[in-house]
Every structure is written in structure tokens, then in C-alpha cells.
Image 1: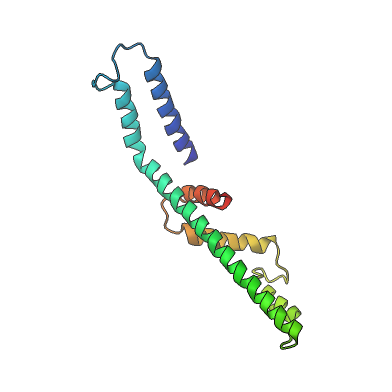
Image 2 (image 1 turned 90 degrees about the horizontal axis):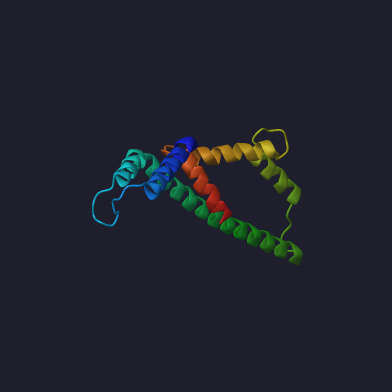
Length: 154
């Protein structure tokens, strides 16, 4: 896909440069249709489905990343608030929390390879699940991925 997109860009730039440096005496502002503009239009019309998919998928990826960041921050806030609230209750003596047991329960849930530890392999498996979920039935997953990464960085 990337090589096709680069080919489109280079062809468009080449056609525009050829139009700028050509020795034809036609005035582009005279209203006469220029042969170079026709070539550019034919290239763009030929590759428009590819360009549209890339653009739509990129925008969807970007928007998904922004939403994921917002949801992640909200969940982090709620988790932090819950922890501080529990610790305040523990400090006041109202409740007792077995954090070792909670830690083990969380490990059992997030440990995908059942090796007893949450490792890089587990993170990779979760990332693959997220990618599969987000890109299922999308016409251009690479454009979505580019948009998603840009959204995460913004």
C-alpha cells in the first residue's frame, strides 16, 4: 500500500513539475483546458478510491486513539480515586484490605500465557487483541494504524 501511495504522490509531483517547466505557450489562466491538468486529474480519479480509503481510515484511526486516550484517562482517574478511598477507609480502621490477594487475582486475570507473571508477551497479546478488534472489517487497516498512532502522540 505504501509504495502505491508514494507512486501516486511522485506521479502528481512529476506532472505538476512538468507543467511548470514545460515550454508550451498556453496560459493556464486563459480558460483553455491544459493537457497537464488532464493528466493529473486522470491520475487522481484513477487512484481516488485508494486515497479515500487511506483518508477515511486515517481519520477513523485518529479519532479512535483520541477516544481511547480519553477513556484510559477516565479509567485511571476512577481507579486512583477508588484506591485512595479504600486507603482512607483502611487508615481510619473501618476496613481491612488484603492487597496481596488482590494483586494475585489481578495477575490471574491479566496473565494471558499463565506463567504467573505479567510480562511483555502478555502486553503483546493484549495489543494484538485490540488491533484485531479495532481493524476488523476496515478496508485499510494500515491507514487506520497510522491515524491511530498519530492520535496517540497528539
